[in-house]
Image (tube, rainbow, N blue to C red; front, side, top):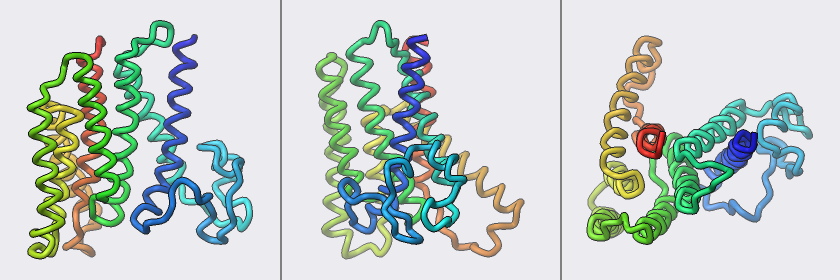
Length: 265
């Protein structure tokens, strides 16, 4: 029973993160504050109260509408909260952590995993809307990677040289993009994807990243075929593919599956 309550708590934490992601994906590209400025209705600009922002429940009790102007709230906000809660729950379950006998090493890994997943979900949301990998969130992920390396080192599981190579390559990409290549390239999206790949390779390791790439290519192919069948691609033949978005979705799935295989299940 305690384990069920523990997992329910994890799910609730995930839904809170999911609610925050909708705000972060909108405000970060606009360089707006995401921590101190209160949420507000984009239609009537009325600041939302605590009761308006309870994940899942507020949407249900308000009938999917703003309490003040009755504007319909997009259902994707509800779906993102449910999906994020589910992802956090599955990740916690994949770590195979027990509430009654919590292992500190597993607890730290789970918390780092939550922070890593939070960052790449925000990256995916921004990429889907704007076809760019946000540098600020990417730097945040580099910090999480560094904490993860310290965690592995304390357990005696880290090959410092291996991780140093990845981080060195990442910094080279970032420096090159912001100096020489910034003047030479009109579109540096490919380089941004490489930077995101380095971040993923550090936290999820090579095998999981290879699985990520394979799943990403399959996912893009399936989506492309589905669009052709539904004849949605005829109107936007030059539509860009948010590769980072698909890469993040595949990476989260690969990470959880790999954890289920390796963490005692």
